[in-house]
Image: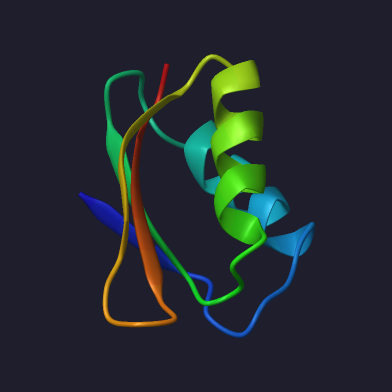
Length: 73
């Protein structure tokens, strides 16, 4: 699984980088996205689902850092 560490970046750059990473992957591949900007979590989730990708998991670990796992649709 590929990891995309976006700590320190703000929306909409977090989604732009996530979208680019997903565009380079084969369908069914998974991408771990790490962010520390709380508003990026629902933004990435909404945009991924609208693009036909799946959000496998989303959790805060450790405090102030969110890890999401997306599957390319």
